[in-house]
Image: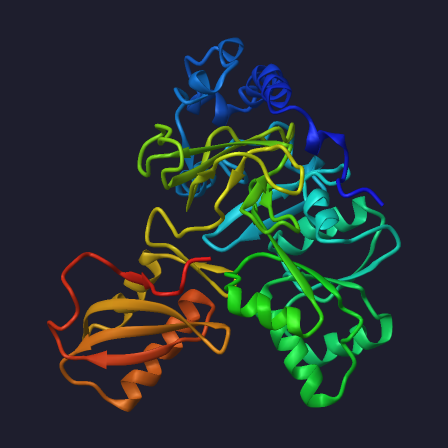
Length: 410
């Protein structure tokens, strides 16, 4: 059994770089047939973008820009290179941001991550990423399908029903958030349902602390993680070496100084910017808002593409909590609905290997009823449950921080 999905993963790095930048001008030219990209990349000559230095001169596009473009020119802000009705699925992520899923095998580049996680033809895989409107479930499902695996579309919630399916179909693998995998195993243990068939997992959408990886390992599940977004698909993935994340073969990754498009120095932490070769929904220098850094050298596993350290936080204050992005503007919306509140700070942490969030709210006249009402508003705005804690007015730092992510990195 090969250790690699194909020979592209072990090709000479210089050959890979030449191939990517030979193909890039054509991808930029195709992107510019779409009105949104034509406006964003105005005055760019695609044939001149044949090296990283030239790519770095192009403007970055931010996810917030996509949302605004989509309001002005629905459904996709003019960034789609073919009509909306010709896509396979029309999806929506929190924000909201609307994304199309194209036809074709493994269009989101998930197969490599699934392969290195140990999934093989005829394996049964349990998929606990969301299938309702959001792209996560479909991104990983397409990678499993490309390898010839069967998929149980578990989605989110309904834990005991999912365990019934697991006990019956006996999947070998799991894709989903690491938190929910722990919930499944904990619930199986409490209820006596059999989830012991799951031996390998590919997780994403939430932090994977070493303590949680170790716990899942002691329970018989070897866990690797991948880094993906709705617009870009799988950007990078871990191998069994667990030494950084290997950049996918189908993307160009840059690390830039946050707030700019300028590449940082070797090993310096900066914002992840990605260019894809998706012909139907191209992304040219999309700034993800995530922080990372390049690692020197190549992976001990033999894959030769560049590596990133993994997720090191957000370039802005946006936090991903239980697989959902929470933005500072949402915290502000909670405050706007409750005039009794002054300064707010949403503190994100971990407890019992689960993400937690607590809204610290300055309030002169606190009360149980108000506390319950704020908690209800917080859930309505963010789609996540969180605690509310009142603090004395003037006690929160005047540092402009709205979301404090106190989870350990990595």
